[in-house]
Length: 160
Image 1 (cartoon, rainbow, N blue to C red):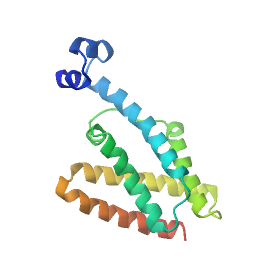
Image 2 (image 1 turned 60 degrees about the vertical axis):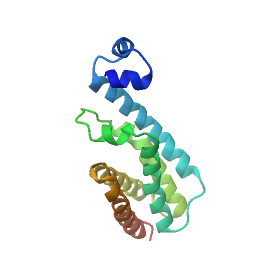
Image 3 (image 1 turned 30 degrees about the vertical axis):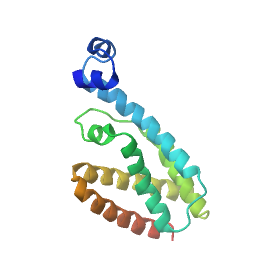
Image 4 (image 1 turned 90 degrees about the vertical axis):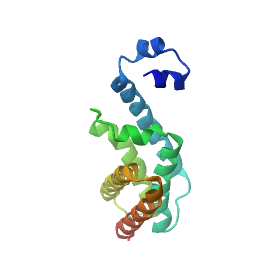
């Protein structure tokens, strides 16, 4: 907590006024990151739809990596043993945003199928983050390459 207070340029007492312990602070930070992630994806996917499965696949992979690079604690918190879960309703807006982007690419894609595809895309991204978090800096480029392949293959079928 001392290091956190120093990084925040706050006194340790002030930090404890707001957060009784590290898990409480971590939960608040995760909640903030979740909201920021939703805004990040909404902004990223509002751009004119990328053409081609490889391009949209790379947008998903590079989009999350950009988010992670701007928030160094995100990966660490993602692997922390915290009791954090969002309700189905809270998870839905992000999936709807992704589903809408997929439907922009393939207008004939039924809404239910687009939503299912969005759920799978989210799980692929979660898998990427889990492997990326454990990889050494030298291994991360290979991890990204492999997950781009996975996403491209998935989208080739989903958007066929």
